[in-house]
Length: 391
Image (cartoon, rainbow, N blue to C red; front, side, top):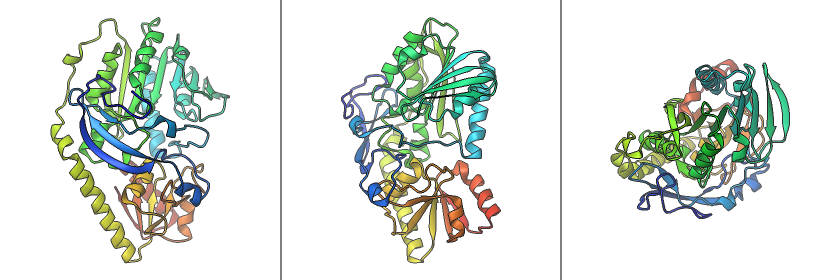
């Protein structure tokens, strides 16, 4: 793959990719913090050009530009302020801890963020090492275990001798995902019982249920169930278990180093031809429908706010081309690190829920339906009796 994209499949190498959709002029990083509206409106821009592989169903953003993507200390994507997300993370951690007997083990996390999930894994008495260039170096206790966060990119040598390696929502950002998987397999081969756990956004959710607000420039890959399975088999892993989660928005896979990997041709593959061929039209229809709704609300002088200042909220505003002052002026987010900052390109201010009491909304649009019940409960407790819908 070149620095600015690929014309071949990143998983199986197929060179005859089929075009899916082109989306110009979007933020290159949805979760970068911008301190002023002017800075946000001048945020770096990029394009999205999606193509799919008819062999393994992987989706590639060939317009990805590595030079425009920088995961430094101004990148903020923490989700654990949400009780619903914390519940999901806790259930996920409990599953792998119990399934693989993680107690007194060495655990490595690739792209650990602030280390919230790693702390859950280490709570029973494990020693964790997390790697993330957006974080400062730190050491802390984690229940009966300990966590060290190392503020740099992960190197495959860091996994040498690890009992368990986890990587959540990182693989889709890598220009060469198979390089990481193959080298990780080699590094872990000395431990026959070592396990890897990866989680990625579910490309099938985007195709089938039109989760189009999840399409962002910095995602080089969109894994479907078949392409994720193919990736791990091709890299020399034996898949222990795989499934979707979080209302099918995520895919996860657990695997060990394989002694006799299955042949790719033996892997299950769901035919997606109809979803691919109709996607562009369905995408345009959904965007147009939401534009009509926002225009109508604006003409009726309705006060509308978005709930969710992450990638979904940013792409919703950018795909609809709704700048601040054109119908939606606020984006609510319960992550205090985002509050006081501004949405890239469109310029809306990100505020905390308490700001809604100063100017009561008529409508709250929740960007992720998994959080709708949580949002309704929160505004009920605040005495805000407005309408709530999800996208």
